[in-house]
Length: 230
Image 1 (cartoon, rainbow, N blue to C red):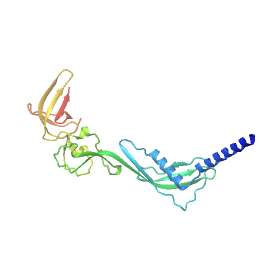
Image 2: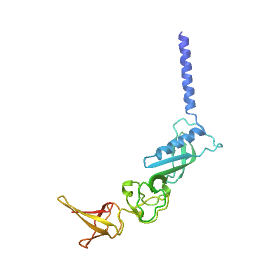
Image 3: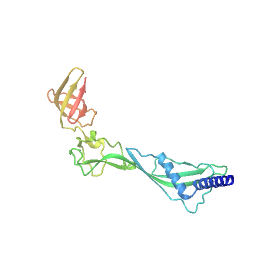
Image 4: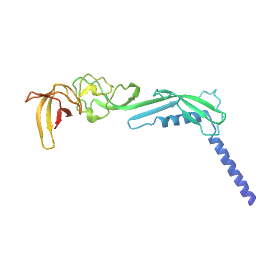
């Protein structure tokens, strides 16, 4: 009985040793997964940005030596480029390293034109949608908030698929008839005016008071509304 227990214990330990050896065995598939996992940690996806990572296959002519300690990875030149080289290293007494090329594609959610929007057209869900586009194709500060865009008008023609920016729209455009709100803690007065310049939410624009003919510089409060806080 004692002999049987010893024999079973020996077999159990032998199986554990074999499993550990297989688990730590290095091959091209393991190295490629290791590189991809590392890149996934370095470039995580978020609600605003999606990341797609593809790692090139390891050259079959490369001999992968064993490593008794955990591998390390880094990107020697992390400069935001789409194409990167991942350095996989074994830092044992006799060191070795392998380089893998990879592609990191980052797309960001921005509002774009569903179809061509003509100058003066109002922007709404019918002609604007949220889409993920490569960040290397985004120039300037593009808009993502529909509350800022919907209801605004195009200052110029916006081609289909182009991202919407503040420069291409105006919540109040030059020539629009606006409501001027003069507000304080104790009272609020409304009157009419004509916009002499264009602007978006919270921006100051020039407005001519229709009644007094005076030119003032209130802030844009909303669609066809400007406000002066006393």
